[in-house]
Image (tube, rainbow, N blue to C red; front, top):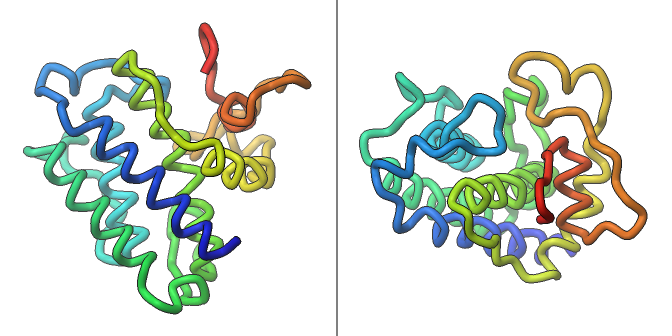
Length: 191
């Protein structure tokens, strides 16, 4: 499963790169399901996340929440994080995630966090663009137990919380829909 975790994360990251490859400057102002964030701000956040998870970034958003060349900077950050996760021993290497905890996490936990983020943010990008998120069911199914383990509660109401409070999940929900609802995404017209 752990090697599969690295592969699943790489598939999710590559899908986000595919989604943003053709963005224009005008697309960056499109609203996203991330409250208060347009596509340019979301892309900057995703870039910083990739850099931070790869151990080469400061976790700080660029001034104005934008990179001058958002698409190219994002693609480079995606390659950086996939290379960092592919290094032998990455599953056991301690990874610092200051946004989550002052204590380092084992690599497998960090990669799991990243996978959840990139499945959800991939959906955010796809939704902003009005196109489908194209992930294999195996990637979504690998993400589902990780999403189920994300704590819900009052911390999700605080400013800067990673996810909004969980929404009700229908018993017959598809795996991607369940992930999105558990992480507070409002779905209009299906996933």
